[in-house]
Length: 407
Ligand SMILES: [Zn+2]
Ligand SMILES: [Zn+2]
Picture 1 (cartoon, rainbow, N blue to C red):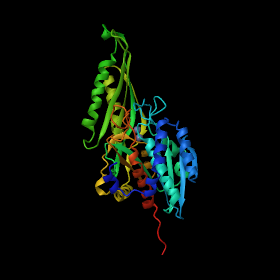
Picture 2 (picture 1 turned 135 degrees about the horizontal axis):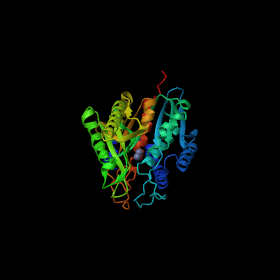
Picture 3 (picture 1 turned 45 degrees about the vertical axis):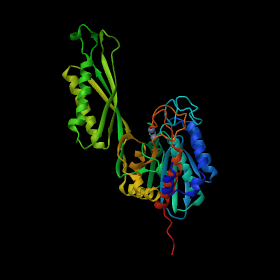
Picture 4 (picture 1 turned 90 degrees about the vertical axis):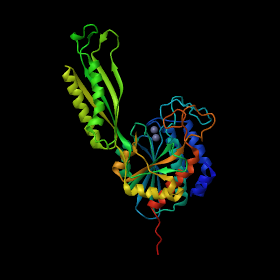
């Protein structure tokens, strides 16, 4: 981080003073990544730190989830701050000292950094208690496709810990260090996946009239699927339909019995998702019927869209502006990536924002050859932003749960 950026940031001095131990914690977690619902070691390390700082904890929501409870004053108001803890099944290409010691597992999405930033904030809040109400620090498992947020909710997160709002934050490579991005409305997409099976009749490839070939039918269906977003959807309503796998046949001289294809759907609204799936059913069914074949289509629910509540996005923006200045709080352009914090924002109002992770120049000289992008094998979380993220959490708490002077 350049000195100029530091000068313009209103970082909390106590957080800056303690940042070396939080950085070491982050790197230790980075070296020991754990996948969806297997975050046992990570959860233990988090629980130990919270306990060391006198913060009561609750363990086991969503299998490995940890919730810390920090109270101050007398108000019944409460908010939740959430960090994700899980890693990805990626073989890390970095060879610096804190690279993963588990081949095939890697913190390539920065959840190690998210966990560390929330821990730093929890430490400060427990020491200072300069707010009025309750803060629940939520350390969540299984964001990467496991829907850990949903499981924590199903296990009673919001009944055990009633709160009025919930907030999340993700690091964003490419967004400069010292900047945030936040916006009201949809910011991350919903995703569902699908499987289509086309049932034909196999035969000798030299005698196609004796069978029902799924190959040309599959080709027509794949192309027709692409007309849904270009012809049926409102052009201003963003969506993605990607057929990502197609499996037909084993031999050059055999017409196969059937074809199986799978893929993913992304939208920002449930209405568009429903329309796409309805049209896919119609196209698959009728294209197959036109050629004398039949089909089956299944959809699998992923995550809903992540939609920020206006009032809470505005409050977050004001808090960020107070730390880094107006020019460094950007518009959060929606992305087709999906995020399971969406489940929490479907239950409670709140806001999910981005914090700049920079362009990758922070990495040690012995990082991998790839770009410092999320889910890339050469990624690393930027330790320079630890104090900024932690300061945001603390100042957000102070803004949400202010201490009113009694006069
Ligand atoms: Zn990720
Ligand atoms: Zn992530």
